[in-house]
Length: 327
Image (tube, rainbow, N blue to C red; front, side, top):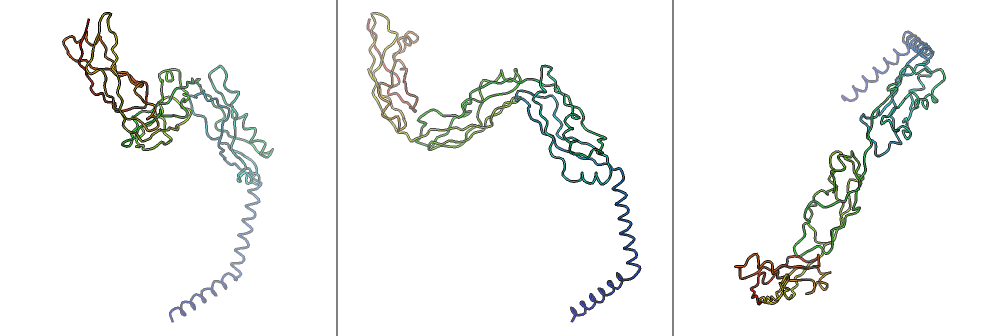
């Protein structure tokens, strides 16, 4: 019942509005309103108007080894003046990025000069001949610059790589690329001999290649932000060999006997190098000069020399030996 009453009210209101719009006074008002708008529009089209536009600037041809003291302008502002109908056409996206080639702007004067009025000629070709440019900002730019120095330095890891239990690295860590180019002032570049990687926190249980960021030194640019690092990891096992003791720096007519005459060496080695590490890989050295430094000591500490870089957790049994000197 209420909905029917509401519809009736809406219908009566609509009829009143329609009757009002059909009245002579309203029709007369709308006619003169449209006529006034038309006359204003025609007047504005023939009147001198101004419009402000901005376009971004892109630069090419700047050498990598050049550093400007001031930042280059990133946009060009200009004010145009012409009849309204022409200015109205400039409301559309008529202007794109202004590209400026600076290839020939870097000479021996160590100063860059840009006359934007010259480069603005590209924009003028898009304008009507009657259009005037009454403002151009900036119209001129100048900045001193310095030449940067380039240097190639190796990249190294900055921390010890964490391995899962019973795992070792069976080869050296591979970094690709190994050398990175620096770009900076001579003073800043000369102080850098290495580039260090960000710490690698992952624990490895197999060979894996990961991308690692480089720690960028202050005051220089680097040719790339990261490198690929390959961690060669495999399972390991224990191995044991028996090696004779070698006496060195022995004077003439002197003989030394050690007890025992050979030692046991226990170590961990990766599975890929298990067979290549043998007794000949090691030398257990008794240095006679150590006796001269400690004449009252009845034992001597052995030194171990070995040629393989893929063995770990080395233990000597025994690490010290007794000896007898015979003249």
